[in-house]
Amino acid sequence: MNKPTGIRERMLQVRHEAIIDSVNRLLAERGYDMMTVDEVAADVGIAKASLYKHFASKEALAAAAMQRVQERALVQMDALEAEADASALARLRGIVRWALQTQNDGQMPSLPSQNSALRHALIADKGYMALLMQVSDRLGEWIVQAQRDGEIDASLPPELVLFTLFARACDPVLPALKAAGHPPEQIIDWVLRTCFSGLAGSAGERSAGRKKTRNAKE
Amino acid sequence: MNKPTGIRERMLQVRHEAIIDSVNRLLAERGYDMMTVDEVAADVGIAKASLYKHFASKEALAAAAMQRVQERALVQMDALEAEADASALARLRGIVRWALQTQNDGQMPSLPSQNSALRHALIADKGYMALLMQVSDRLGEWIVQAQRDGEIDASLPPELVLFTLFARACDPVLPALKAAGHPPEQIIDWVLRTCFSGLAGSAGERSAGRKKTRNAKE
DNA sequence: GTCTATATGAAGATAGAC
DNA sequence: GTCTATCTTCATATAGAC
Image (cartoon, rainbow over all chains, first blue to last red; front, side, top):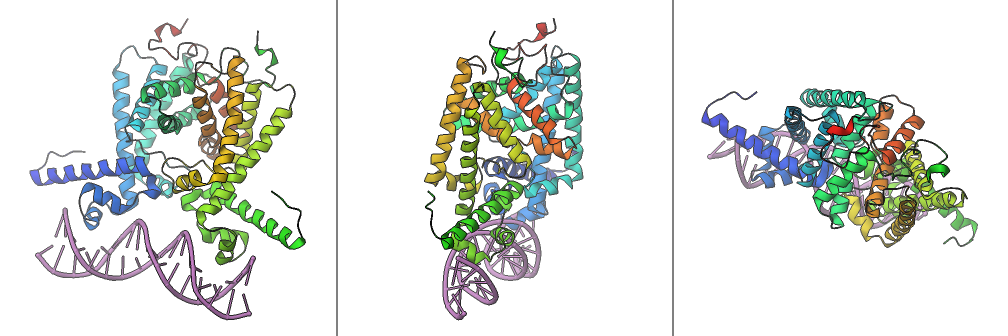
């Protein structure tokens, strides 16, 4: 992927990275629809026309940033797998924690929902989809392993678990509680806890799947 | 709020409702940014200029729809409180279930995140904010009660629980799993279950808050 | 209050010189 | 590849007749 080339192309690569940095941050900060190409150009410090020499469209710009997020997730997953004693559940918690910390740093663009204009562009992007599949497959393996170990509820379809983790990666609860004045590390712990253990207390947790909960208080 | 007036003003009210219906559906379907006033006009079946006689701006249009969602939530909460044997937890589950069903029917506009242009308009809207407070306060009471009953983890700040429930009301997991072919009712049950009981299985649930989970497997 | 037609502005994208 | 200046499209909003 990186051919060790001359100094000229090296500088181009650096600028490329600088552009993606800006896009990534603006994407997290403003969202795809609100972000304008003028903003990106201003943030990078070059003219808009120059930007279009590097990327063909606003969509391509965003796709490149989203792609790099996936790449970084993969790097993070490598690191988590390198930890010898980590259970599958611990790895899943680890990657969600990383995502939340990234979001807290203002560098996690929220995944495009059904409506966003970005979505269609992304599913048409081969490179992005390939990376997304890679991330999904590896997470899927962790999930199935965690279910075999009894660490994740085995009656839940892995698909549900996967999408739930994706959703937690850009959880709106984090910015909401930040605005309310809570310290980020504390919030991240809370979100992780509710993600894996739920909101229920001691009385409610074993009866949550049933209609009648009157006998919950022992 | 409704003065029982003549037939002429009655027809206006009906049209008003028809407009909000369209806006509400389009808001759920396309999101605020993607929704255009032209679409709304076409959907209602009147000219765009006529629309602007009813509502001063696109923002006002959306605010009215969001306001009605809150009103309907309050009605739903009345119904849930009317059920004599419902515990606080059952009520919370009930309102989230209602929200998910509403989303499934394509009538739940996703709450505006940090970035959306709609957000600033809404926090400036007295009527919307008053309703939001009313909903939040009543949910807050349910949450505190559920915590007293041991049905919701009492060590979690009620604020966190509240925001978590708001987030679940427009959970992206529902449309994602629908696209994957699962039946909506099944998905809603899963989402409710993971919301209150978490993803963890028997081995993981008691150790989720701790660093070391090696002794989780009995 | 409803319409057709138009004003206004913002944002994605490009032309063409250097 | 970078720039300034411009084109084009489209969406919000309004004029003005009926």
